[in-house]
Length: 216
Image (tube, rainbow, N blue to C red; front, side, top):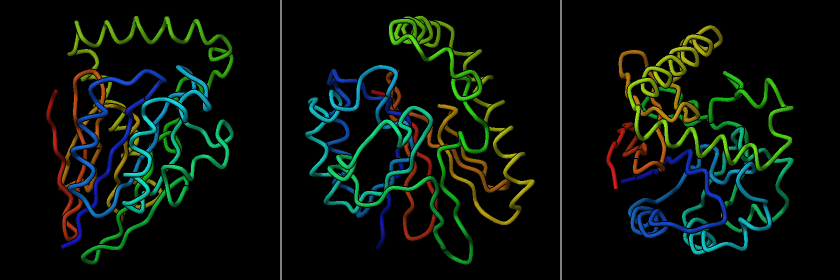
């Protein structure tokens, strides 16, 4: 029985937290791992600091799972070097999996709907400003969850609509919006995030897609 784990949007900085233990327990349960973007966050730390951080405890475990790394908007390949191979066996912008007569298209989502910093790159020039924006946004999400949910749904709708204009046959699996969803009839899945006390992920078990939503 093949078991594939898809995670996205951990947005790791250089400081380790309780998610390390959670992932060290989760990853061994699967045969393969797909990291669907924004694994580390270039606006919260540098590449070298991330690689040398305590998160490196995950690296051998990920390598043992033939991990596929799909780039996102916060972990663009031009901000990394060959050390990406320390925790992933393959790197790409998107992935196609054939399963039970269906094609599963996996990508982070910023290639479908660009992020704010990709549209307006000038806002990322100051790392201090970015960190301040993150703290404010994190606080708002924790205290006012409903607007965030509405924003996530709208973003998922936009990704699905734009993708369907190009491909009406494939199952689409994304991250990017941070809002986990399973829309079986529309052949759309979003893996949510592992952050803000959320532990969301997708598993593909013998070709069947399952969204897991939990908290920590």
